[in-house]
Length: 99
Ligand SMILES: [Zn+2]
Image 1: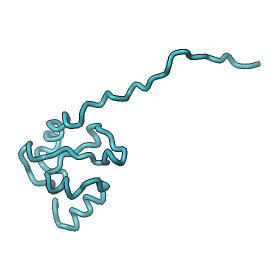
Image 2: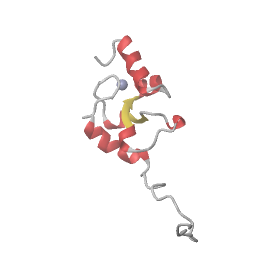
Image 3: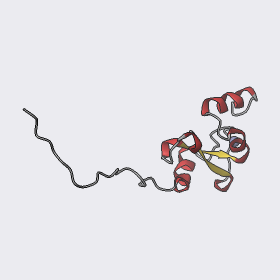
Image 4: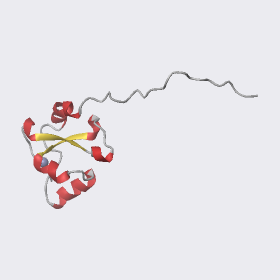
């Protein structure tokens, strides 16, 4: 005996794709969460001086979700590049930054 086979004629579609808002829209939320402090050096910056960084770089399959984003000042962001977050924090610590 064969089990009943359900044959779908419609094409299944992924539903979660394209629903994440552009990552830059999270800047204000992140600025509030971090209270205006850079996530690297911990210095306080005006809103316009903090840039949105992907904790896991998009080139390494990081997403645009809020929990993968942080605000960094220009100096920290260029230092981090596509570096892993743990390596970035270790480098800051070695340089005595953000303690
Ligand atoms: Zn910084």
